[in-house]
Figure 1 (cartoon, helix red, strand yellow):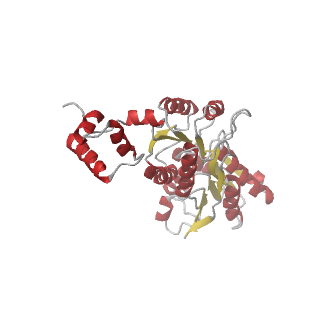
Figure 2: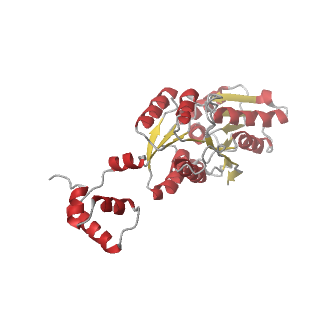
Figure 3: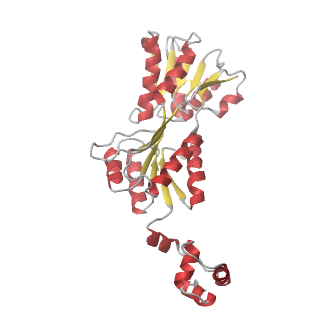
Length: 335
């Protein structure tokens, strides 16, 4: 059975195709009686408006691309949910992509989204694509950075950013351990090619230097992964002088840290204290864990990113200064 056309709907409702279009797009005045006839005809003929045709006519696809390192990470899921709750009611759909922390894969995904004519791109970059991202923004493609900063070329327009105060937060997290007498600390850091890895490590180093303990710090690159956290603990436990505490600078690595400490039969915090950048749900299953964690707000960050997206898509702010929303979090402890 062939699909009904807008002309057939118009004939059934005894109106013009322009009137059917106004009813479907809610543009211009149409009397209630005529609307009822049009909707009746649509129902009778089972007419399905063409999304492609609508996007071409309105110069919008009503699609927003979201590129994050790991779409299964609860942190990025929280950001995405916040975005969706803002843009969804306005008719926009999200197209999720995972770069797997690969600059090469991220580059391919960005090109794909551009070719799909998405109305905007949300990006938590894996690093290494500054020129490509700058070119996208210069072409008029709205790009909103989340979680991670990006240094683009001077000629490229500055990008909107929704992120955390990474250095200060990592400083406070480390200070919580130092204030409880720990002087030999192991830090599980992320990829330093991305801003979160660099900034969080800077915060840890600042806290240690203030106490004159920078030479007592052990640094291991955990690549923002669970396996990285496991390997970090294995490395720390081989040290002649083991650290008495671990600072893990993202939730995935923290999960790995906890898994390996428990597997090795160590008590937390009796044998090894742990401070996590981001909450780890598994920490609540431990007996008297005393786990320190940074209370992040990914959903709220997503809400803010969603608001910026709508303003950029609707061109409400023109060539205004970029949005730069920085979230500050506090250190908490699971007792």
